[in-house]
Figure 1 (tube, rainbow, N blue to C red):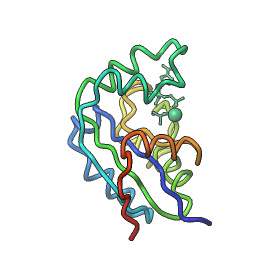
Figure 2 (cartoon, rainbow, N blue to C red):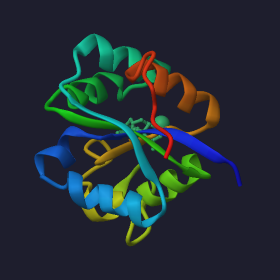
Figure 3 (cartoon, rainbow, N blue to C red):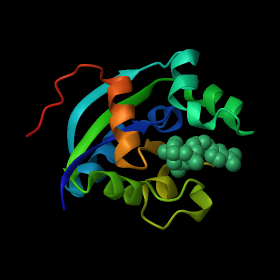
Length: 141
Ligand code: RTP
Ligand code: MG
Protein backbone atom coordinates (compact mmCIF):
# COMPACT_ATOMS: atom_id res chain seq x y z
CA UNK A 1 0.00 0.00 0.00
CA UNK A 2 1.16 3.53 -0.74
CA UNK A 3 2.59 5.99 1.75
CA UNK A 4 -0.12 8.60 2.28
CA UNK A 5 -0.65 11.76 4.29
CA UNK A 6 -3.82 12.71 6.07
CA UNK A 7 -4.98 15.63 8.18
CA UNK A 8 -5.87 14.90 11.80
CA UNK A 9 -7.34 17.30 14.35
CA UNK A 10 -7.53 16.61 18.07
CA UNK A 11 -10.69 18.58 18.87
CA UNK A 12 -11.22 20.98 21.81
CA UNK A 13 -12.81 18.33 24.06
CA UNK A 14 -9.80 16.02 23.86
CA UNK A 15 -7.29 18.86 24.18
CA UNK A 16 -9.18 19.99 27.32
CA UNK A 17 -9.00 16.43 28.69
CA UNK A 18 -5.21 16.57 28.29
CA UNK A 19 -5.03 13.42 26.16
CA UNK A 20 -2.99 14.71 23.20
CA UNK A 21 -0.14 12.39 24.18
CA UNK A 22 -2.39 9.35 24.57
CA UNK A 23 -3.86 9.97 21.13
CA UNK A 24 -0.41 10.52 19.60
CA UNK A 25 0.67 7.17 21.09
CA UNK A 26 -2.15 5.47 19.17
CA UNK A 27 -0.95 7.05 15.92
CA UNK A 28 2.62 5.98 16.63
CA UNK A 29 1.67 2.46 17.69
CA UNK A 30 -0.22 2.07 14.40
CA UNK A 31 2.90 3.08 12.44
CA UNK A 32 1.81 6.63 11.63
CA UNK A 33 4.35 9.44 11.90
CA UNK A 34 3.69 13.08 12.81
CA UNK A 35 4.90 14.95 9.71
CA UNK A 36 3.74 18.41 10.87
CA UNK A 37 1.82 19.77 13.88
CA UNK A 38 0.34 22.99 15.30
CA UNK A 39 -1.64 23.75 18.46
CA UNK A 40 -4.05 26.54 17.51
CA UNK A 41 -7.21 28.38 18.47
CA UNK A 42 -9.31 28.39 15.30
CA UNK A 43 -11.16 31.53 14.31
CA UNK A 44 -14.84 31.27 13.45
CA UNK A 45 -13.98 31.97 9.82
CA UNK A 46 -11.39 29.17 9.71
CA UNK A 47 -13.79 26.67 11.29
CA UNK A 48 -16.62 27.64 8.91
CA UNK A 49 -14.32 27.35 5.91
CA UNK A 50 -12.77 24.06 7.03
CA UNK A 51 -16.18 22.43 7.56
CA UNK A 52 -17.73 24.25 4.57
CA UNK A 53 -18.96 20.98 3.02
CA UNK A 54 -21.38 20.71 5.95
CA UNK A 55 -22.70 24.29 5.85
CA UNK A 56 -26.25 23.31 4.87
CA UNK A 57 -26.45 20.59 7.54
CA UNK A 58 -28.50 21.19 10.70
CA UNK A 59 -25.50 20.55 12.94
CA UNK A 60 -23.21 23.09 11.20
CA UNK A 61 -23.64 25.96 13.67
CA UNK A 62 -23.06 23.72 16.69
CA UNK A 63 -20.06 22.11 14.98
CA UNK A 64 -18.43 25.50 14.34
CA UNK A 65 -19.15 26.70 17.90
CA UNK A 66 -17.62 23.53 19.27
CA UNK A 67 -14.51 23.72 17.08
CA UNK A 68 -13.77 27.27 18.31
CA UNK A 69 -14.55 26.52 21.96
CA UNK A 70 -10.88 25.94 22.77
CA UNK A 71 -7.54 25.10 21.19
CA UNK A 72 -7.16 22.20 18.77
CA UNK A 73 -4.07 20.15 17.91
CA UNK A 74 -3.69 19.79 14.15
CA UNK A 75 -1.31 17.31 12.59
CA UNK A 76 -0.35 15.70 9.32
CA UNK A 77 -0.06 11.94 9.75
CA UNK A 78 2.08 9.98 7.33
CA UNK A 79 2.34 6.27 6.69
CA UNK A 80 1.09 3.31 4.71
CA UNK A 81 -2.61 3.74 4.03
CA UNK A 82 -2.64 6.65 6.49
CA UNK A 83 -6.08 7.95 5.51
CA UNK A 84 -8.01 4.74 6.18
CA UNK A 85 -5.74 3.73 9.06
CA UNK A 86 -6.49 6.99 10.86
CA UNK A 87 -10.24 6.61 10.25
CA UNK A 88 -10.04 3.11 11.75
CA UNK A 89 -8.16 4.40 14.79
CA UNK A 90 -10.78 7.16 15.23
CA UNK A 91 -13.87 4.92 15.14
CA UNK A 92 -17.40 5.92 14.14
CA UNK A 93 -18.51 9.58 14.21
CA UNK A 94 -20.94 8.83 17.07
CA UNK A 95 -18.86 7.46 19.97
CA UNK A 96 -21.81 5.31 21.05
CA UNK A 97 -21.39 3.42 17.76
CA UNK A 98 -17.58 3.40 17.76
CA UNK A 99 -15.81 0.06 18.16
CA UNK A 100 -14.17 -0.66 21.50
CA UNK A 101 -10.57 0.49 21.63
CA UNK A 102 -11.01 3.32 19.12
CA UNK A 103 -10.13 6.92 19.99
CA UNK A 104 -13.75 8.03 19.94
CA UNK A 105 -14.94 5.08 22.03
CA UNK A 106 -12.30 5.85 24.65
CA UNK A 107 -12.14 9.67 24.67
CA UNK A 108 -15.31 11.14 23.08
CA UNK A 109 -18.44 12.18 24.93
CA UNK A 110 -20.96 12.76 22.14
CA UNK A 111 -21.39 13.03 18.37
CA UNK A 112 -20.57 16.73 18.71
CA UNK A 113 -17.65 16.47 21.12
CA UNK A 114 -16.10 13.51 19.37
CA UNK A 115 -12.39 14.01 20.10
CA UNK A 116 -10.88 13.85 16.61
CA UNK A 117 -11.22 14.71 12.96
CA UNK A 118 -9.60 12.79 10.12
CA UNK A 119 -9.64 13.36 6.37
CA UNK A 120 -11.97 10.89 4.65
CA UNK A 121 -10.30 10.51 1.22
CA UNK A 122 -7.14 11.41 -0.71
CA UNK A 123 -8.75 14.48 -2.28
CA UNK A 124 -9.98 15.90 1.03
CA UNK A 125 -6.65 15.08 2.70
CA UNK A 126 -4.79 17.17 0.10
CA UNK A 127 -7.19 20.11 0.48
CA UNK A 128 -7.21 19.94 4.30
CA UNK A 129 -3.41 19.67 4.60
CA UNK A 130 -2.98 22.70 2.30
CA UNK A 131 -5.58 24.60 4.34
CA UNK A 132 -3.69 24.32 7.62
CA UNK A 133 -0.11 23.96 6.38
CA UNK A 134 0.09 26.21 3.31
CA UNK A 135 3.43 26.02 1.56
CA UNK A 136 4.90 24.05 4.41
CA UNK A 137 7.69 21.58 4.15
CA UNK A 138 5.88 18.53 5.42
CA UNK A 139 8.76 16.44 6.64
CA UNK A 140 9.00 12.90 5.36
CA UNK A 141 11.10 10.56 7.49
P1 RTP B 1 -14.86 14.58 11.06
O1 RTP B 1 -15.15 15.20 9.70
O2 RTP B 1 -14.89 15.59 12.18
O3 RTP B 1 -13.62 13.75 11.04
O4 RTP B 1 -16.01 13.54 11.42
P2 RTP B 1 -16.68 12.46 10.48
O5 RTP B 1 -16.04 12.48 9.13
O6 RTP B 1 -16.71 11.18 11.23
O7 RTP B 1 -18.15 13.02 10.37
P3 RTP B 1 -18.77 14.09 9.34
O8 RTP B 1 -19.99 13.48 8.74
O9 RTP B 1 -17.72 14.62 8.42
O10 RTP B 1 -19.26 15.24 10.30
C1 RTP B 1 -18.37 16.23 10.78
C2 RTP B 1 -18.61 16.45 12.25
O11 RTP B 1 -19.88 17.03 12.43
C3 RTP B 1 -20.45 16.55 13.63
N1 RTP B 1 -21.69 15.88 13.35
N2 RTP B 1 -22.73 16.03 14.09
N3 RTP B 1 -25.33 15.89 15.18
C4 RTP B 1 -25.04 15.20 14.10
O12 RTP B 1 -25.84 14.49 13.54
C5 RTP B 1 -23.70 15.29 13.56
N4 RTP B 1 -23.27 14.67 12.51
C6 RTP B 1 -21.98 15.05 12.37
C7 RTP B 1 -19.49 15.57 14.25
O13 RTP B 1 -18.74 16.23 15.25
C8 RTP B 1 -18.61 15.18 13.10
O14 RTP B 1 -17.33 14.81 13.54
MG1 MG C 1 -15.75 14.22 7.98
